[in-house]
Length: 196
Image (cartoon, helix red, strand yellow):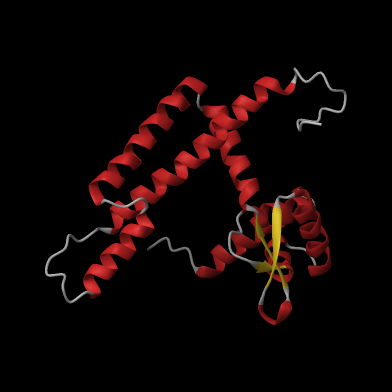
């Protein structure tokens, strides 16, 4: 006799987990959680379905998230408003996570290592970015004059792109750490950081 979990049992488990999530959270929390993982534009109806709420409620919360900078809007097919996670909110979240788990000294060392790795890529391939490398190699492949060229594996491109992205997040974390040093020291009553 085999112990087999059928599709219906998984559907029941998913439904139960979804029902618990709905019972334990507000519509706003669910909409925020759904949009926090939406890097491609989605409609309010799509978010509403995933967040277990109505499209009207989802749209209200999505508009509030757009106003706060957590989400951003665009125009989709047929002029429909679409929503996605804003890049700025993702950068701030990643930088805060880095600040929580990595000391400033360690972060400075990692930034130096990543800058060196990117410089190594640039020196080795003679271009400034992985995108430029791809274009360069595609042009060589298409050129009749190119008899031999070095193939670039996808892993190298991914590593370069990942290192560049991680460096950007680490730099953001360092910038936030630097700014935090001055937050309590502002003598102006309104806290304005811009020169008057």
